[in-house]
Length: 272
Image (cartoon, rainbow, N blue to C red; front, side, top):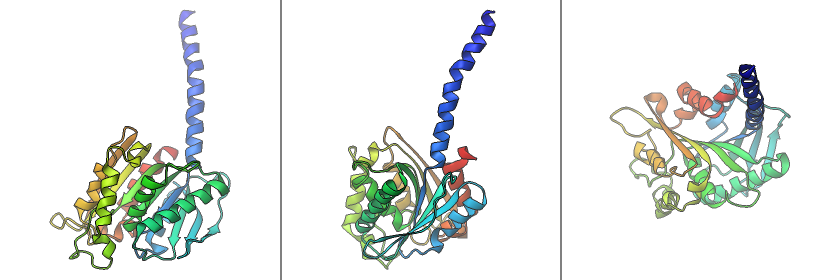
């Protein structure tokens, strides 16, 4: 009789735990993932990651948000109720905006709109290249605002976090400005806002070969420096370095199935 009571007690105790876990999983399935392209990016920059993850059964493409050069938002597509792991593509009309401080303001505007229109309270983000600088600046300077959706998981791809050499990338003076270094120093400060966030981070880095420690645009050392940022008490950090032609700067998001696989597993593997 004592054994039967003990077993019964275990079942009773487990039921609310399972229910809570199921509720958490369901809420995570409704959490959108926003995709941010980089400098000069187009609709093709993130299409492969978005469409293929849907084809693989992990997520659902929903909205496309277009941001005009003046910061006006236009929405295309729909967000069906119950959509599994909704994906939102963000396209910037001024895709050669060097000052990522401006882009961060637009991200703030996007998230406020998603909060009002769709009751979004948490989100994931996948950023490529210069888009990383925008989302990082947003997290440091905007994410503590009242009623602001909070980030859950972040995927940084080919992140140019440090000042870049003119010999590698000549098109954009902001890549060599002291502001880039100043902003990064604020991210790694012990009292930075980013350090206070509850966040999971995956850092995807490319290098053309074991001798060429860059992806044709961003040095490995520049992207790898993100490790110095995510050291908060409620944060996890992991990095993956890919090598070869498909680890080239643009190819990382457009035609690298291994990158896709890592992102799918990192963001949604528990939801399959």
